[in-house]
Each structure stands twice: as structure tokens, then as C-alpha cells.
Image (tube, rainbow, N blue to C red; front, side, top):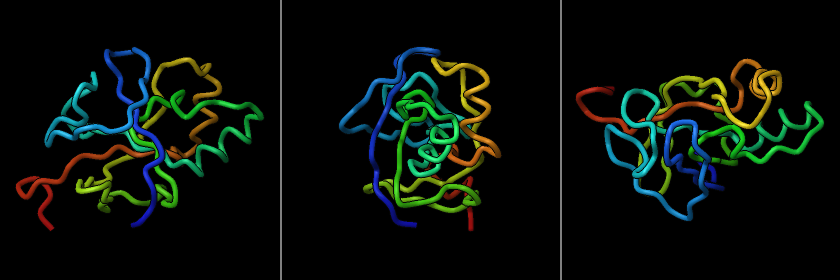
Length: 135
């Protein structure tokens, strides 16, 4: 897959604001340095910029991508149907794992459901490791 990293967001504490960053460090097995959520399959949340734009256009409102509470905003790569594939972001490889529902945040509950019908715009990712992701 090829594309472009458009934005990086780090959440300082659970349910806290998404702070934009110019750069971030990915720690294997944890996620982004300084992010409140660490480990497991949801080390990083990816957001497809084009699918996000489609979703907010359907709502008829302008919403900042940070509203979705994802860590990495990517363009030029559609995330739908990419489970198990690998995405390179700079020197880092991320295994795309599973769809992710919008978490609590500033968007109203109805908007959260409408923003990602079929979870089309976002995926979770983690750094692959040989012992976990053989093949």
C-alpha cells in the first residue's frame, strides 16, 4: 500500500483531548509514545482521510478528523478490506488488524454511528513481530 501520513494525534489521558503532533515514536508492543492507550491489538488507530470526508459530507457538517479520536490520519490508501495487510509509515511497519468503532468524544452518539457505517474509515494497527505475525 502507498499513501501519505496527513496528521498525528496523541491522547494524553483516557477520554482526554487528541493533541496534534508533528512527529511521534512508535514503541513495539505498545503504540505511540505518550498516548494513553497502550498494548493489545489497538496500539494505533488509523483513519482514512477520504472515507472520513465522505462520512462527514453525508452528515452535512464539518468535523475535524481529531473528533474521530484516531492516532494517524492517512490519505491515498483506502483502509476498508485491508485486515492483515501491512502499512509502512516512514520506517515503521503496521499490521492492519481490525475495524474500530468511534470512541466517546465530542461528536454526538448519532454522529459517531453515522461517521463509520460498516466501520469504513478506520482500522486498528500494531507493529508486527515475528513471534505474533508469522507469514
